[in-house]
Image (cartoon, rainbow, N blue to C red; front, side):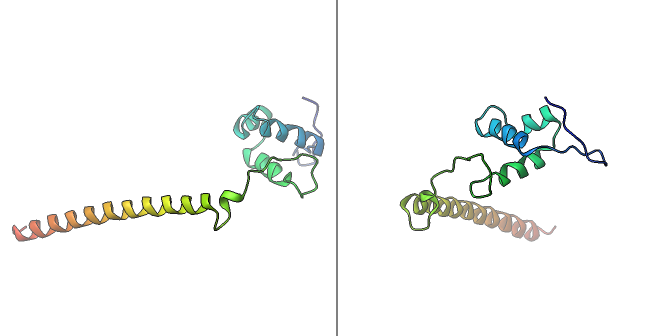
Length: 116
């Protein structure tokens, strides 16, 4: 690794080219943010900030591949299917919680009725 200049308070000053190169490694799947942070002794939160700042339209030379947004668009078939699955899961969870609550109420009533 090349020598990185430091500010007067000791913090390192990373050139934009270095940032693009390192975040490119993450985007290509060579390393995770956590692995890169350990390797460079840089906080993962800082690496995440670099990654966010390099999104298309932010003036960066690094192109970040974007997922198709059609599945997330309201009204699209995949979006509606995802919502239906979520509603189903929540309905099931609600039913289980109601059943558990009823059982606890019955147990409490029987406990009180037994005189304790």
